[in-house]
Length: 80
Image (tube, rainbow, N blue to C red; front, side):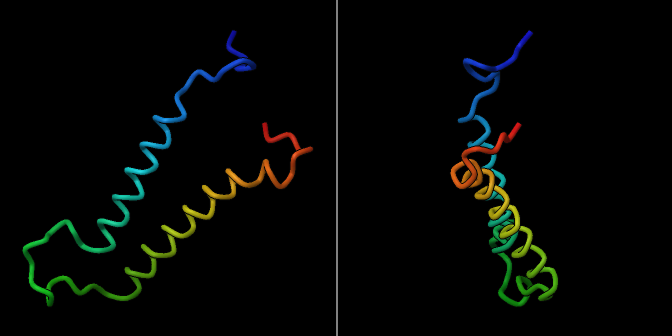
């Protein structure tokens, strides 16, 4: 039985590495690095699509920061 009292069964560095890769992917799609040889006319996208990407990246960042800060703000609460 794995109750994870002494150490966890997964790697924190592996998780943070994948989270970094995901944020880099979102930045890549936001700045249109997928097709670097295109003209500036072809790189323009519609503003609702841009705002969906921006808001989703900020929401993801906010949720991630909350999971880091919440145990410090509420030390008596059990976050299991």
